[in-house]
Length: 553
Image (cartoon, rainbow, N blue to C red):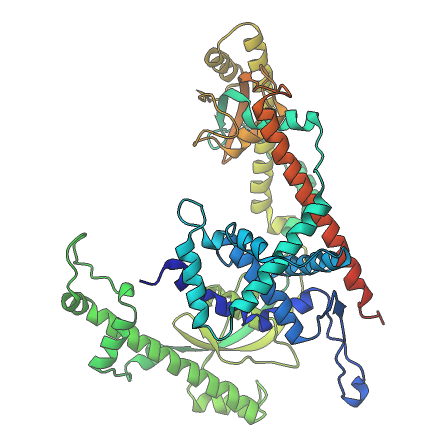
């Protein structure tokens, strides 16, 4: 049986050699502008962009640079894990590391080093995370049937990876970290918290908010940008409904069966019982009428699109201007009636056509120089648009949008008052807790004093490493701002106001001689070392790219 790793590499390593196209795209990302010389004569000269021995303007060099990087990353992670941007960064920094290895005259990678490196690759790890010789052999067997990838290419990439890792270790250094930073991270990760929350429901919060003309006028003037009416386009439409053509569409039994077989999941049998054995014949018979109707409508839709396209082409081919006698004659001959649509914006398409954003986009391309569109797909048919005019953005009078302004004003005032009530609740909680009340009693007293319905809840002890499953992120985020015995400000989360009380906090062992301290220091040192390595290589990449940067004209 062919193993998973063999199937995987046979499928995905072909991608490596399709990276010529990806690399061409990436070459634009890394500031290769495609500048040409001799434009006045129509002649193009290739721009050479040297980069640590590669020419980024050469598709062959791009394929080698990014193909090697993609193979390297795939072997190290066990799957094709990098998108184009990440692959670009990895490939360029990998090339920089190898160039630095040459500068430092690091020796060539030995066979033993390659063997040891292979055993550390995730692509060849078993379910227990350890090197699996069978998976590695399956991979080698797959290379025999792959004319584009050879063992020699894989060995070269692995040998380069070993040298690149050696360089990174030299650059990284010890990864210095201060004892205070280690203690801070231990505190954040392993402190055991006991928290309690007081929750106020925003939806049921209903303060009395007077709305005066003076207040509305001031609010409108301060927020007038929210009510600006954007540019709108006014068009008429020639609509061709697919239902007008469905009566003339006929389909054969084999066509209906083929449509069903192509995607049977689209047509589940409504009468089938859950868990029952599938009966393909009965399933098809139960949904055949729906399949036939859908097939006819799809074909009718194509007919509608063709008729609409024929109209648009006839206008173009005959150089017929909308509104001319010839235009009226053409519409009459094709039995087409124009329907004016209500003006609509770029963000909200015509309501008569389902608010289609695609139609809105095409409508805004029309104007005096292009007064009609191509055939466009529309709900249940096709349409051709005819431009009437474009209305510029304008600022409406308050009287035109008074209802919306009043609603926004009331909501804004409600939220402001809710936040202010949260401050009062916090002060009440702090006072009652200081007086010796339990948290539940303090919450009840604060709710009574502020006329707010509050719900108290005490969470079981937890640390950041093992947070409670039902805790909101706002609760965990408040830990950095809380000390034992403190009450947080109210935060609004999912239409609820939440205040957090730190009932207790138990610190972990912060002694520098402890095992946890040593483990955390090692982790932080490794992180700092990786950051330093990446920064150093990124600076090398930037400096090298600037050497061949096209001049600014």
